[in-house]
Image 1 (cartoon, one colour):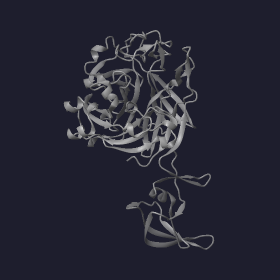
Image 2 (cartoon, one colour; image 1 turned 180 degrees about the vertical axis):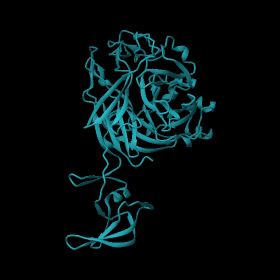
Image 3 (cartoon, rainbow, N blue to C red; image 1 turned 45 degrees about the vertical axis):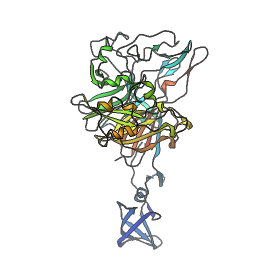
Image 4 (cartoon, rainbow, N blue to C red; image 1 turned 90 degrees about the vertical axis):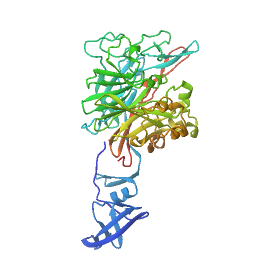
Length: 495
C-alpha cells in the first residue's frame, strides 16, 4: 500500500509542454553508436516551470525528458514497477486501493459489526493504520399502526471505535475499544460502565425493541457517534455525537472525560454519569432529530477543534431548515474549551441535480489540513448510479465571516438567502472541489469517513448501517449485503 518509487525512464517531449534548451554535453553512446547528449533545459507546463531531477537528453535529434517530470507537467501520476519494468501514467484522481471488512464479528439476528462513521490517521502511525468508529449500533424502521418506529435490534450494543490496518484489499481490526463511563459510575440503563446507543430524552427519536412495539428506556448517557478526531496536545480523542448534538472527549482507553452540550441541555440529562459541560451555543438544541453533529476534526497544531452540523437546523422551524442550504461549522479553542467561531457553509443546490432533495444534502465529515483550511465531505442520500453528490471540497475559514457574536445572522442563518447574507456583510466559506466520487464509481450512499494521509492521498469510509434492511410483512428484519469499505484515492496536491 502506498509504496513510493523512483523512475529513470525517459519520454519524448510533446504537446503543451514547452522546453528551453540552455546547454548540452555528450554523456554516453548507445549500443547502435547513437549518442545521448545531456541537455540543460527549462521545462514548462503552461507558465509553470517543472523541476527536473535529472538532465534531459537528446538522441538522434530527439529530445527526451524524465517521464515523471513529463507526467507531473501534464498533471498525471507516474508509477514505476521495477519487477515488470512497467511505467503507469494515470490521471488524478484515481482509486489506488479498496479495502473490505470481510470477517466482521456477529451481533446476532444475522447482523454484523460495521457502520464506519468516521476515519482518522493518527500522527506517527504507519501509513496503513487508521482509526474509525461506529455509531449507535444497528437500527431500523418498522411501521406499526401506520406509525414508523425506530428499532434497536441489538439493545446491548456498546458504541465503540476501532484501530484498523488496510492491507491486501482487506480491513483488519487491530483493536476494538468500547466507550466507558467514568470510573466508579454505573449507567442508568446498562447498570455498569458501558454506554449505550439509545436516545437521551423524550423529544429525541424514540427507541423501540426489534418488534417495534416495546418502547425502550431512555438513556441520558446514550451516544450516536459520527466523527472522530485526535488532540496531540493532551493525547485524547474527540467524537461528534448526533443526539444532543454534543462533543465527547475521551481517553484512548475509551473512558469518557466530558460531554459538551448546547447551553440549557444539562438540565435535560437527569441521571447522566458523564460530566456535562454547557459549551455549545443554545441554538444547536434546535437541530433536526437525527441530524446533529456529524463531522469533527482538530487542526494539526492541536489548537482548534471544528465540528459540523449534518443538516441545516430547525431555525426558526423544521420546514425552513429542510429547505435551507446553510449549514454551520463551529470552532473551539481546545486550550479553553470555549467556542470561538461559527461559520456558514453553503451546500449544493439540490434543484440543479436529478432526484435530490435539499434536506438530504448533508455534511458527513471534516478533515483539517491546517489551522483554517478544511476538507468537507458533502453528500446526498442516493447510492450507486443514482448518486449525484459524493464530493470532497476544500474550504478556507480564514476567508469566511465569523457569525458567532452576530445575533441577527446566527439566530436565523438557515432562513437567510445568499443575498441576505451578502447584505449583512457575511462571507460564506469559499469552497473548491477536490474530489467527486461519483466519477470514480463509488457505490455507497453513506460516505461518512474522511481522512488525509499525505498531500496526494485521501481515504474515505462508508457506513453500511450494519447490514440492516427493511422489515417484511411479517415483521422480520431483512439483512442486506452492503459492505463496509475503505477506499484509498490519489488526488492532485492538497497543499
